[in-house]
Amino acid sequence: MLNIVMFGAPGAGKGTQSELIEKRYNLIHLSTGDILRAEIKNGSELGKQVEAVISKGQLVSDELIIALLEQEISRHADANGFIFDGFPRTQVQAGALDEMLAKHGEKVSIMLALSVEENELIKRLLNRGATSGRADDNLETIRKRITVYNEQTAPVMKYYEQKGLLRAISNDTTVEECFAQVCKAIDAAKA
Ligand code: ADP
Image (cartoon, rainbow, N blue to C red; front, side, top):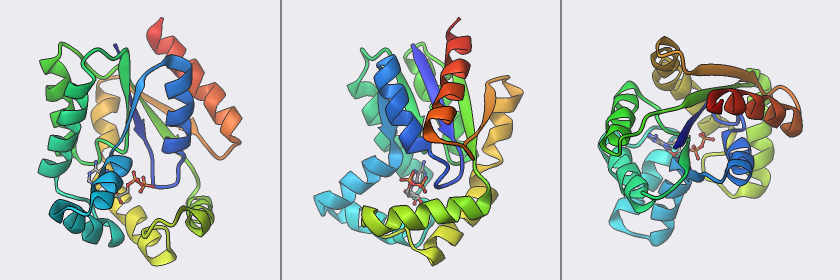
């Protein structure tokens, strides 16, 4: 299996690159943001709780997101591999991901860390907000999400760096240029 962790601040392009990787390498794309938004759409009690957290730009609980992800991995036991987009976002989640994969005799193959300069991140998210209809793509919530990323998520990069799995890629470029770098890193990991 090829298991790729997509890392980076909100607006760094994880979702866009994940979709391109999914097609080229025939992997299962698991976006925790999409999984949570589907839960909200359901209108369940859980969905309502999730909506309140997301619209404030905060993280949902580790327990909840780990349980949801575990379900998705088990549902696709026959996959060629996974793209984890938006997970792990905390140290606890990073440890949990290793445990989940180990249960299936698997591990993380590579972690791709996309970087975009902060003003550009805000610009891209505001642009997306104009059409996405996402309740968290407004200036106040975007700022909060970037703070949460810097405080809780960015430190997780160390965890992968220590395992020799971190590949840093600038996405202050076009989608195509970034994808070329992404493919280079993945092909090297596969070889
Ligand atoms: P972005 O990366 O652009 O912020 P996502 O769609 O990945 O967008 O996530 C949207 C929101 O969903 C996050 O701000 C957070 O509230 C919640 N979320 C997504 N993934 C996780 C996770 N792994 N742990 C906790 N909360 C999460």
